[in-house]
Length: 101
Length: 101
Image (cartoon, rainbow over all chains, first blue to last red; front, side, top):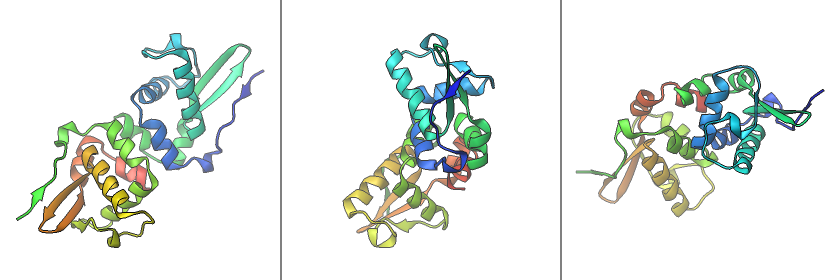
């Protein structure tokens, strides 16, 4: 059993929060890492090549989730994150390609 | 005679400052207004349908220019602004289309 943390519905994903969420070098790297592999990944800091603290990483996951870019779900003691690639494409076709090119 | 204010060269336009510049509702509207007409437009606040002060508008023009999204040039007492649409397309193809869709 898993529970999904709150996130905006697809139709409520708005461009300004999405751009604000993407406008950070660490978050861009996280999005890039998630995009390279479509299956959910652990949110744990040991999984990512970033020079930040665990609480800072948690904050970045929250910003991405609240903007509608990612889904976070909890299974036992593990948090998983995945890119909402289809939802983003529905709302802003071509955005991720343009940003991550 | 006109003089162009400092701006990054095309190859120095970077995605994070561009996203930071775009991640604001007023600046998005300014970009949209500039994109609707390829000729230079006055920077004057009377030209734009925005509910902000003149100094705030000046600040927004500066952010857009420094990110590499716009060119500002001065002719006498008038400042003109235009979108660097080809430069942006060269660096991040599809970005403006995706953001302004």
